[in-house]
Amino acid sequence: MKKKPNTLDPNTPLLYPDHQRPKSRRDFIRQGLMTGAASVLGPGVMGMFANPIAAHAALTDEITACGIAVQGAGKIPFICFDLAGGANIAGSNVLVGQRGGQEDFISTAGYNKMGLPGDMVPSIMNPDTNLSDFIDNTMGLLFHSDSALGRGIREKASAAALGLVEGAVIPARSENDTGNNPHNPMYGIWRAGADGELLTLIGSRSSDSGGNSMAPAMMMNPAVRPTKVDRPSDVTGLVDTGKLVGLLEQEDVV
Image (cartoon, rainbow, N blue to C red; front, side, top):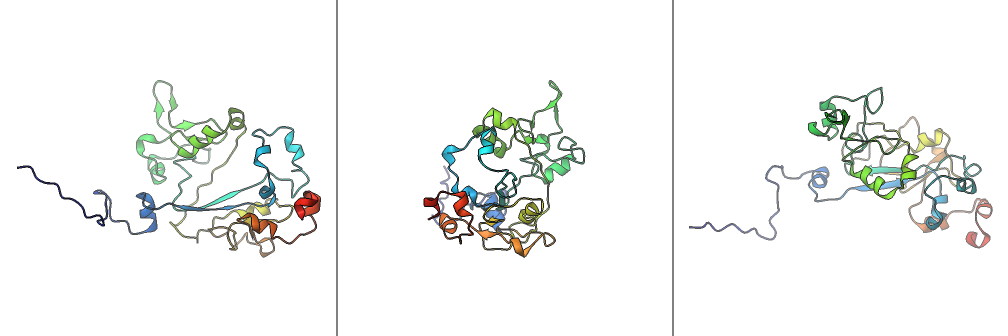
């Protein structure tokens, strides 16, 4: 006699047989039941006025027309994605190593703590090529070949732009799903010399760091606390410091 399968009530939760019941926010995100969140910060307000149609993929002579050498501190603009929700950048996206650099590999157990299974660590060499199949060196910063973040960059950026990309990765230990991690770099970027023309720092939250996480106490400076700018009305509502006329057309200022 054929056994009739049990039908679930529409309100019965669907649970994975090999996972415990989700309890924390991180559990819900890991099982695909919730999405993460992110805050975006930047040290200048001029990006709000930029025309994306006039953007150039490669840094050529057009960089001179941007006035980057005379506006602000003359530094390359910096944006911080202050993530929340369990994003794993170091290891499974951008490769990390020891003192010798990204290709000074750590142990398999070390990579496992960063989310890489033992059969996908970058130290495994292909016997036919004597090279690793898990290292992508398209850019100046090495990515794991299976990195979704790396795939997205390679899909959208031109070959010329990819050849000009440089980067660095600094792993940091943090607690899960809390805004108490002191990793926000904005004050450190300002101390390194970055400064905006109209505002020194801007953020997407009305917090001391301007974002989701905390800034290191040793770097904080109340004099350059980020100003919240997360919508066009925040920009138009800024008090005119007298510099707008010199940076924009008169009708744009009005």
